[in-house]
Amino acid sequence: MNARRARRFSVKEFTVHTSKEFEALDITDRVAETAKGVKKGILFVFVPHCTAALITNEFEPNIKQDYEKFFSMLRKEDWKHNKIDDNADAHLGVAVAGSEQFFFIKDGGLVLGTWQRIILMELDGPRERKVLCEVLST
Image (cartoon, rainbow, N blue to C red; front, side, top):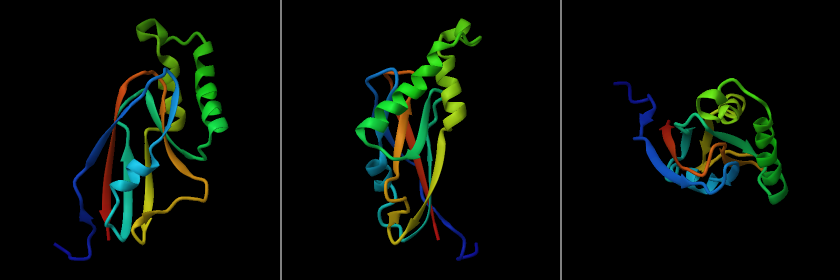
């Protein structure tokens, strides 16, 4: 094996409990914990759910409410999937926002913009959600 290849770390997992149908939760600090001790690399974050998304953006009380309102507005339509389990809006929200993100690690910390935070967006709660993180260091 080439010594210059990225070293693999095992997947780290944590759980988030949501309390509302549509809820934006700042998970930046918990995600950053999984990269501690790594000087340089890439952190992959994945939410293995079809009705919870990841967003990287500003997080303050007003925009938090706006995220929740924005995604809840999808609820107002008569989607075909609702005939099966009445949560088409949640699936469509994830299709737009995504369920995975990656971040650079530099000097032992996540590389984020000044106001950027990592947000788990609950779209079909309340639920218990898993967040999976894997670091590839160089």
